Image (cartoon, rainbow, N blue to C red):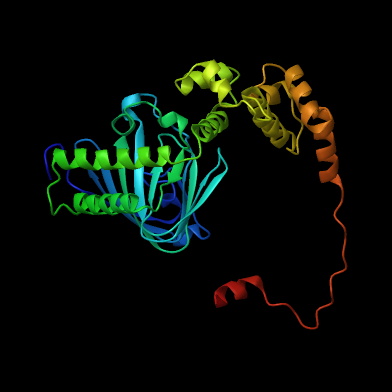
Length: 336
């Protein structure tokens, strides 16, 4: 390989343990974990990491569970799959159907769900975000997105796929100049798609929801903190929500209340102070006020109703009489 490159590494992922062992995805979901198979080839280049992955039908996810703290370690991923897929971004609610060969870009630490409907090959390049986004606007864009199907973006996707294949095959040395070219192509594709959206307002609102989804449990989260994370002033942030029925504070409170409702659905006894703390509320009183605004009842009343519902005995139905003995379960498994 070229200067700054290491020899390609091949890995085989199998079964349940393989579902959390992929170097580019935090988690993989499948209907039958025991039958999961994947082959991963990785090459560390001078400025980026190239990967080729062959997977059985699955959904790959980014959970943002362990975000990089050092800006130099924050990686943006550009990926191309050779089969149809569906990309979901939980924070923004975006959902995109992707044809084979479409370029998907994932921002650092993004939460996303990418479903493949059959065996698939994925070519991916993980590049330091500072190289892609020199203006520092990545945080204002959705966490993951399928770029357009324009001729330029298709050409970029083809280049990314071929570049990753060349890198992991080890047959052709990858020079630093080639890495610079692919970085420039990815950056240009990201910028083209940013310029083509309806408005920057949509990007900022999506980014705000991403931050809230990731940080709502921290009591320090506020509009001012979100503005700081998105590298803008609080006044600038407020402008993007002019005309919106919900303010940034409303969005934060709504996410916290929703999490409180999930905790209050638990079968056992709960302490309101602990629920408030787990949801990012400064006190149980604040939790109560916000919860009553949303559900028109106190959180303790909601919890007691949920427990009472669970304690109701199930409706007993008469079992039909069998005309012959049932087959033992063990025999049924042996016949499969």
